[in-house]
Length: 133
View 1: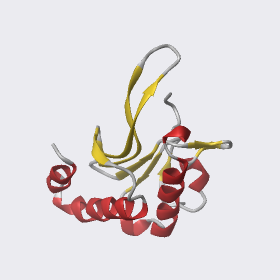
View 2 (view 1 turned 135 degrees about the horizontal axis):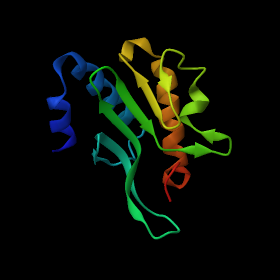
View 3 (view 1 turned 180 degrees about the vertical axis):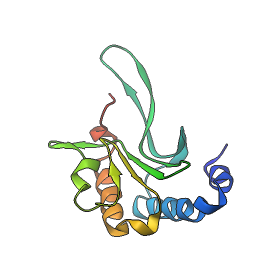
């Protein structure tokens, strides 16, 4: 499946939000390649290798349409912790875990805060990927 096929397959009631969030990511971080990365679309793919020898592929950002919410995965950390968590005050209507921002509808969140989060993750790049490498 390609990213465009994924978007076309999203449930009709979520599709407009997912397409809009995909466009926001691509506009804000045009240098990140767009690939399929389970559970959805990944942006900024990179290869990692743990000291143990385990290795794999991941994406700096991810987008997934779930049954009850949209998920924006932000695999990035700063010297103070996970980047997504640093935006908790700016995204009070979202549920934010270490590397995931979840919300039911795009209209219910501060899109400018999302844009800044995406831009900051893109500027830090895979070198700041949290939880891998």
